[in-house]
Length: 149
Image (cartoon, rainbow, N blue to C red; front, side):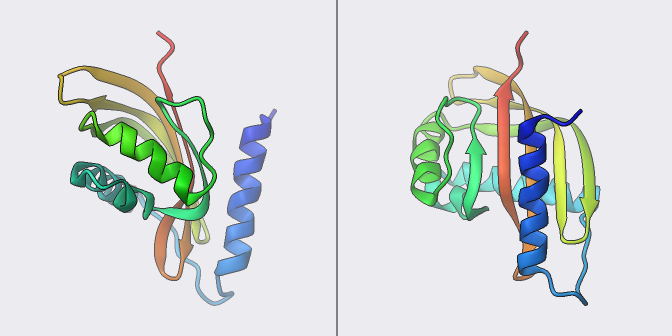
């Protein structure tokens, strides 16, 4: 049975696909490309610039962040979260990943670890949903939660 959040993510991807994809242009994302998208996002973290990180997301993307109880649903909210998150100089590493891709949309789910400047770490689960918009893969939804154990 689907959880409400799964249904919302699927409907969100479908809406993006219908709104931005031309009927003659259908691209899928492979694991190598998904890894490159994560690395693009991770490199933007390394820049220390919250606006560069937020540029990986569509303006109305939902961010349910690892270290915040507040859903971030607009650009200002995402920039606010990343300004605080980047202060700890995070560096992410994917530990496991599963990719589901279809026409101009993809969902990458798995686990990752963040290491911070003080050598602390956070192990977390993640889901990035992507849509191909104007020939660029952008994050439409990002959920991350610390491992419960």
